[in-house]
Every structure is written in C-alpha cells, then in structure tokens.
Length: 198
Image 1 (tube, rainbow, N blue to C red):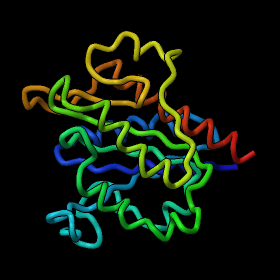
Image 2 (tube, rainbow, N blue to C red):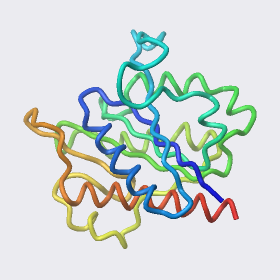
Image 3 (cartoon, rainbow, N blue to C red):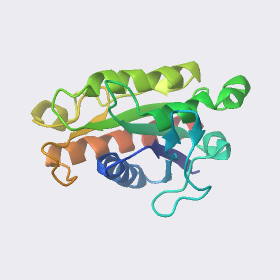
C-alpha cells in the first residue's frame, strides 16, 4: 500500500520551496509514503496564470488529477499581509469541481509558510490556509507539542504548521529547529494518510 502525499506550494524567493523539500524528505522516510512536489504558476492581478503551461524549472504545476490521486496534502505559501499568496488562492478558487465531487474529503492536511520578519503574519497565514481545506472536508493536523523543535525554536515552527523566518534578505537556509518541524510535519501527514487507507 502506498500513500501519495501532495506537497503543494507557491514560492517567490525560494524559502517556501526549501520548506517543501524538507517536508517531502520527512514524508519519504515513512515506509509506504511518497511525496509529490507541486507548485502553482504566478498570476497577474489574481485573474489569470501568467506563466507557460510547464514550468521552466522546479516542481510541475498542480493539476486536478494530483488532488484526486493524493492521499494527503501539505500546502505552503509565503505570507502576504497575513494571508496566503495570490497564486495559491487563485488555484484554490478554481477547485469548485473537486469540492462538488468530494475529491479531498477525509484526507489529512497540513500547512507551512515563510516570512521575512519574526512577526510577519505567519500564524494568521497558516490559519487562513486551512480555510479552503476545511471547505473541502479535509482532516486538519498540525505539529504536536511532543515535537521538541517547536518548544526550542527561536525562528520558525509551531503547532499550526512548519515555518521559516528569513531576515535581512539572507539566503534561504533553514535552522535546525525549522528542519525538524518540516520533517515532523511530513512524517505526521504520511503516517495519518497510511492509517486512514488501512
């Protein structure tokens, strides 16, 4: 039995993509689980996709089939005024068919984010990203406090999901605690998905 876990994200400067890769590592450590990295194209004025049909580099774009065939989903976005970025919101606004068909009902889900300041709206971004997932009937799971990294972190990570703080325009590098939170989140959703498939 295999559980396919969709890691769906939008990343502008690389920090959110780096979180996604570490979450995928956590998923892939669970026997029988497989991470599927997917992204969404940039949008112009939140009305239409502005990039080619196939990305030049990085993860492929997410498709309705990816949603249908996943057994769990972990979604990430940089913070945008305490909310998810427009390209990811635009993607979810186009999932009415999947919502009507119940494609994601009873599949486990989690979220992750990055910001350029310690109080840059991470918690409100994480919580707001759960809204479309709740409407789709997904089962929400965060990071439990049994994960020591969220007790000890001075940067990102908490019970709502994995996160990263990128300050002073530095290159995207995750702290030890941020990496641990990513791995824990990936492992948790993969484990739940496999349990639900049994």
